[in-house]
Amino acid sequence: MGKKIDLATAPTVKGTTYPPPFDEPCLKRSQIKLGDAAGLTQFGVNLCRLPPGTWSSQRHWHAREDELIVVMEGEVVLVTDSGEEILKAGDSAGFKAGDRDGHHFQNRSKADAVILEIGTRVDGDTAYYPEIDLVSPNTPGYTHRDGTPYPEQQRRT
Image (spheres, rainbow, N blue to C red):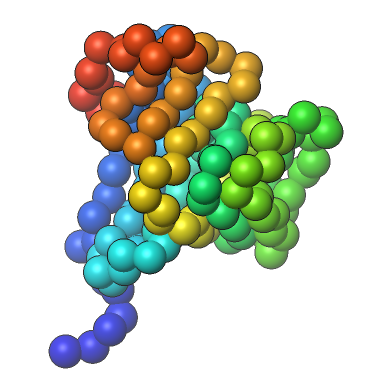
């Protein structure tokens, strides 16, 4: 059997599990889980489609996981503490574990954008969301900064 991943049958998720109202900007995103389709365990790889007006995530940073993003199609705006940068097809950006400069991508164009998301999978990682009262500990679900859990959410699209 070959190793080629069939995009048509690879696991795909749409929307987000962020609690309201934080879910709104990410509801139309879709991710093909390439790493899962290949059985990878040490790092994740997603092909993420962002329709116009959609965000890749809320602005966040990881305590223990590195991330690398490559723009495959279209144009996105990378938002960090340093400001905003336009990235086009072929451009990339990396985010080192523990760097507290939160990031995310917004599609402000009139066409779909596609980004390749690559990130390590590290036990005990926590994602922090500096602009909102949200933390993603290395357990299912989200908490407030004080540790109080948000009600569990089904994936919304």
